[in-house]
Length: 227
Image (cartoon, rainbow, N blue to C red; front, side, top):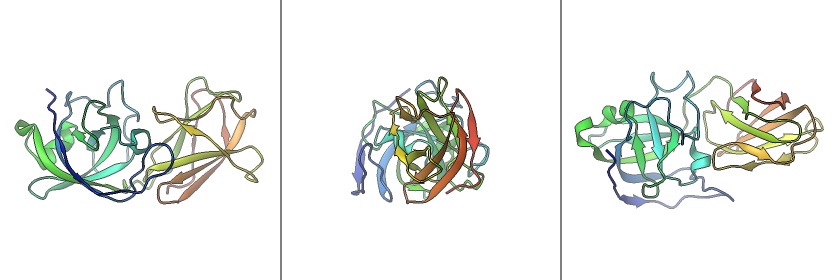
């Protein structure tokens, strides 16, 4: 059952062009139990795949968020503190389109760590934090990707991703991509080559470069590091 709640307070946050990316902020909200509490991995509206193996806990607490820069927040983590002072780190993997701005839906494995399931709605505060993932970033191509249509998602990043750029000349120059609402970085006309170098930048400005990434349908490439 889905309940509706209000954002009680929120501090101002810096933003970039496109979807908003709060860098550091604490938001006070009422959170509710995700409507299908046992649904892991997330459902068809999810913007992020099942969480990586290396997450702050096993299984990783999961959370859905109202589209406050949703495409840029998915795959990021929030520290959620409950009414009794208990806190968890949860990964954002889905959206809550009908919720109030900044509102969270907690999956059962997150909700039960800071409240009781029978409550349904509890008062909390949350802030964006590092996910604590040390294994390398993974780049995943969308089905249909080719030298003439580019679509790539960044997975397993320990910080939220701000942008993805592509180089076809060994890193001498970098071309931008457009982040879609479904959390893939795209260039509709592609880059015209079977492989590219990819530069991924986090919200804090950290950079990971992956060389010779294949540009082909459903391919993936693993970086040598994380942010």
